Image (cartoon, rainbow, N blue to C red; front, side, top):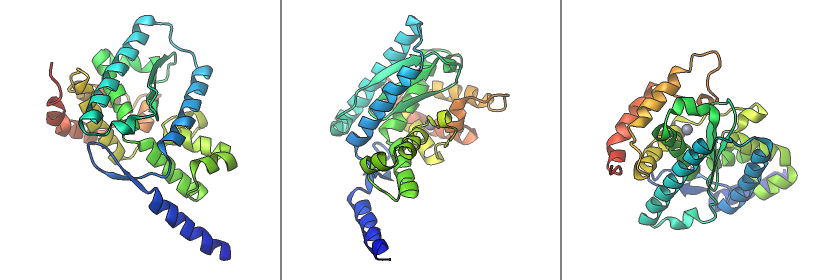
Length: 267
Ligand SMILES: [Zn+2]
């Protein structure tokens, strides 16, 4: 009982100390129990591990396309953050864009700008603008720290809100699984956690703006998500749809945000 009395105030204190950060562009306040430096260190380690265990594509042309889109979007994000005096938030980023040889229809971005595109998604993205839709969306999830929010919720629910460093030391496996699930790689450990409607809508809105600033026509997003959701009923629905559920609401939402995104598109 005594322990509980001490424990509860500690949780409340740590919640008020860290608690919330604000999502750029949308201004939404979110739960944040982990620092950027802590999460980036874990992210970089997991990313290197992933690259060691998977095969990079040997297709130079497609690999270069992934890197070109990545650099264009990176530069758009940096411009946006500089214009809004937020450049500090990008400190510690170590952007990387890799194309991995895999039939899986998927792509993701880990904290600190670590992007992976699977060759399996290329038939659905069809061309450079289509892939910019996906990479813009994934980078937007990372920029808005949706994974960090999910990770914080997991730490709170499963480990009582301890600091990430403590969790890693005491419960390394649980913490790693929390990380994989929070950042959309849960399929490798058999736990898939779809992003919430709020996160999806936010990533769509930010993704449209970033791709438009990078010189890609944001209208392509409507076509891509329509193509993607058409494969929902197939025998093996894309991995991408498990983490990014798609329906009519998304398409309507994309159309709603299109006029805002088009203001950033100058071609
Ligand atoms: Zn998403």
